[in-house]
Image 1 (tube, rainbow, N blue to C red):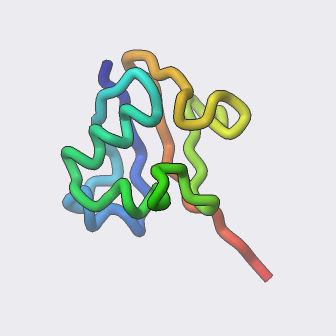
Image 2: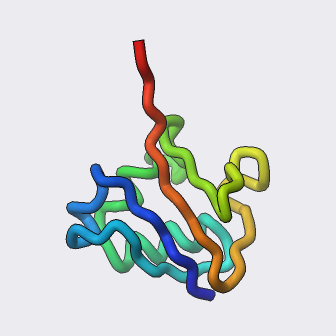
Image 3: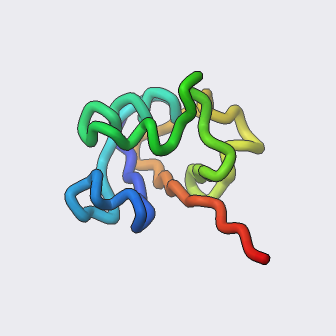
Length: 91
């Protein structure tokens, strides 16, 4: 299943400057593996050494935060919109 993934500006160097790419996968975890295959180095920027999403990375599927769904096991459907959003801290 193909999904559209919105890439934040700091990661666009890994996607040849593209702000939006296609990826495949039945779950967010599968999609991350596919992104890594297409754009080497992106997964290590999004996930820690154990393969878990970093705390400062938020992922939304059709505008729903996966933290309130099944996290990396959140199911994807063909045509879903996935947004990767780095958390911003202020002070």
